Structures are given as C-alpha cells and as structure tokens.
Image (cartoon, rainbow, N blue to C red; front, side, top):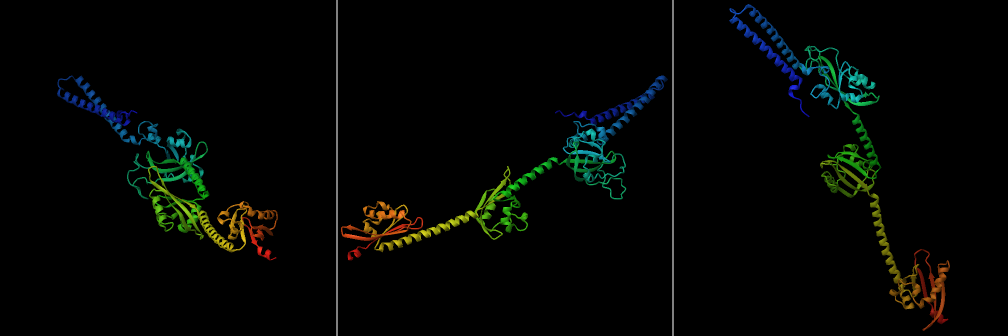
Length: 496
C-alpha cells in the first residue's frame, strides 16, 4: 500500500500556510518601506494626487501585511495544539496515526468516561457489548455492568476542574495532600474483574483497568476492558481435561507420578501416594525427586539421573516396605517429557506392582524344590523297596492301571524266565505262556469289588508237580500299583 505523501498531512499543510502568510506579509511590509523611501526622495516634483494615492496604497498594504502575519500566528497555534484536539474534532478513524485510529486497532475494549458518561468507545468495546459505537456515546457506563459488580468499578474522579488551559497530565510532580501547586493527584491504575451485560442479555467476564487522565482540562477516566471469555473457555476446557486425566490416573492399576524439570512433584495418583507416603512425608507437594531419594539404592538413583538426562530408564524387582508394613515388589520406569525443541519439561514415573508375580514365582520354586525332594525320596524308597523285593523268596510283579509292569524282582525272573530289563514297561498280557494261569485271576479281580484275591493252584512241570499260592492286591488309591504275589509251597505238598 502506498504511503501518504508528507505534504498531505494536516500538520504539514498548516505549516505551509503559515510560511505563505508570513512571506506575503513580509513582502508587503518591504513594499511599503520602498514606496515611502521613493516618495520622500521625489516629493518636490511629484503630483500631490499621486502622492496621496501612493500613501493610501502603502497604508492598505501595511494593514494587509498585519493581517497575514496574524493569520500566520494562528496557524502556528493550531500546529502546536493539534495533538490535544478533542476526539469530536478529530473525527472517525482514518489511515493516519490519530488517537481513534490507534484505538480502533486495539484488541482490548477502550472507553473514555467522564462523570460516568461514555465520551468515546472503540469498536472492540462495542463488539464486546454487541452495541453500535454511536449508541454507546453519552450513555452511563454502569448501564453495561452487572448490578452486583457495579460497586467494583472505581473511577476515582473528583468533582473539581483542573485549572489552566489543557495542562499535560504528566507535567509536574504529584500534589501532596493539602498542597496548592495546582496539579492533579496521580492515582495508580485500578484493576477489577467485572461482568458486562451485552445487548443479548448475557454476561461476559472482563478485566477492567481504570486510568485517571486529564481530557480538555477536566478529569476523565480511560477504561480498558480485556475479554476473559476465551480465557474462561480455555480454563474450563483445561479443568475438564485435567479432571479426565485425574479420573484416568485414579482408575489405572499403575502408580503414576509426574515431576517437573527441577524434580518437584506436580501430580500423582492415590496408588503412588499410598506406597510412598512414608517417603514423601506429611507435605507430598514439597517432595523433590532430585533432592529426596525414594530409596537409598544405587540402581534407583542412577535411573533417576538418566531420566533427568533425557534418557528412558527403569528398575526391576524393586523391594519396598510399605507404610502398613508389607513387603512388596515393583517395576519402575522413568520417561522424560520433552518439547519439540528437545527441552526437558518433566519426568513421568510409572510403577507396576509385581508382588503377586514374585510371590507366585517364589511359591512355584518352593513347590518345585519340594517336588524334586519328593521325587528323590520316592526313587530312594523305590530302590529300597526294590532291594527288599529282590531278597523276598516269592515272585512279586507290580503293574499300573494300564497293565504295564513297573516292578519285577529276582524271584519273578527265575519264575517266568524273563530278565527285569525285558519285563519292565511291557504289558502283563504279553509276557508269554507262563503268565496265562494268572490272567484269569486278574479278570476275576476286575469283575469283583474286593481288593484282594487269593488262590492255591497246582500244575505239572518238568521237575514234577508244583503247588503255589497266588495273591493279587488291588490298590484302593488312584494311580497306585497292583501287586501279583506268587509263593511256591511245593515242599509242603510233597510232605503231605
């Protein structure tokens, strides 16, 4: 946009007019002086009528010169006092740097008030109230303030007028109480939060700053209104977001705490406070992670230093005694919070309770150790029982519920002619023909409810007739072994 020419400004036009009036008046004065000198030299031979005409012309020129000089002085006065023109004489905002133009560019509302009457209002103030600027002029400022907040507006205007023509408000020092130097007492600006009534009947919160000034020789108040509507809305949105974050923090099973860049705690949920209340003390808001250590552990202190050094860190299986005397275990992670430029704004501490996992793991290890001990004991007992069975004269065979042989003593090897390594793990029905006499007894035991069957049977062998007592013991417990005991009584039969 083209800048206005310097000659187009009103102040420069006044100066140019003053220079023209001064120059033309000086020209007329010099002309009168030249005519007087000319006629004084030729007064003897000049016609009297010409002398009278020239004298009249000189008098008129002198009067005209005085008039031009007076006009030049008036133009100088306008240039000097142009900065203190009233708002009514300045007019509407224009492209020049006049007071209304500057006020029109302000985002804050502005109103010039005298005796509670609005003398001027910018467009921001009219937009705030939803009223045209012309409708605001010559109205009472308290008409637009909520009745409950009207008493908060202190204009601070006295009813006397300041003496002197248009004194500058900053000229001189502040008048002391009871002084007579003719200066207006300077009062500091006052600020208050008010509710302004709009044309729609609703209210808008504003911060009103009152500045006492002098305008056209009288006291006035310059009111600046800062609209708090967007600020209130942003604050309300921030409070809602903070409330949602608080609800999320309280509902999460994790213990969460946030610290600023200096280590001071900002926010933490109840799970975190309940665990570390014996460390933070009665004033948790004063706890500083860099100055007050959570626990005197080198790994934990190292993780904290790394986090404030903009590096993720953590500690696993941290053992801590809670305020109620219980020992618990935690996994703690520290995450630095950085800006887009990489500056540290805080550190987040996330703590996970792994007490149940640790206890389950320890219980599992204990049970595994007990199970191993029981297995070792069972193997020892099995070996001991196997030693006892091996020395027993009767043939003893033990098999499980799937009819697989689990015990085969030396007497059974001699009786059935099958080595132990070959018999263990095989089904009892596949041992051979020598097991056939005992399978019927096993079938009979399966059809009865008794836990033991005993039978004496005789059969011929190459060495003669053999008589033996067969006993089958069925275990009452599940997954227990069934025992087949074969005891030869051949010598008894021969004696009979």
